[in-house]
Length: 141
Image (cartoon, rainbow, N blue to C red; front, top):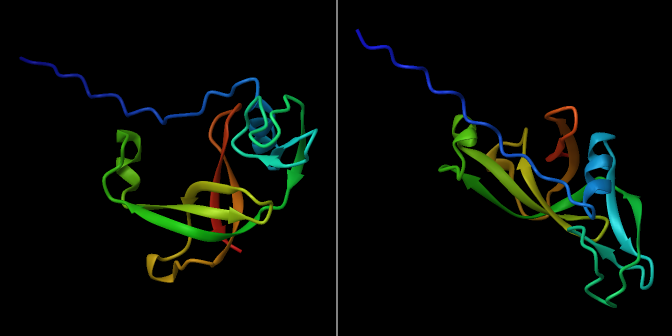
């Protein structure tokens, strides 16, 4: 008699915060959209990084940003890159021009594919995944 083990469910890929990105992830956990700003020239940096790409300063500060934005583009994922997402396929990922002046990509939820259009207003939501990690997603504004 053969016994075969049931395969374990695939694990969800999660971000690994760095020294530069930890305040961003702390903000997500607190349901705040925190963005890094250069302390020298004032320009916003997203994704978080140690050096300003505009003036090369290494000084920065963190500021809470508005949650709204407009869809720049989107894609429907039929063949996920990771087995964890297979159960949710097809799902939509949107690239959004945030009111804060940066682009963010995240899952788009609660909007039918036929109702998605470039320029449509959306807002950032927060999905607690673990005690330490909260991930962004978008919903209709």
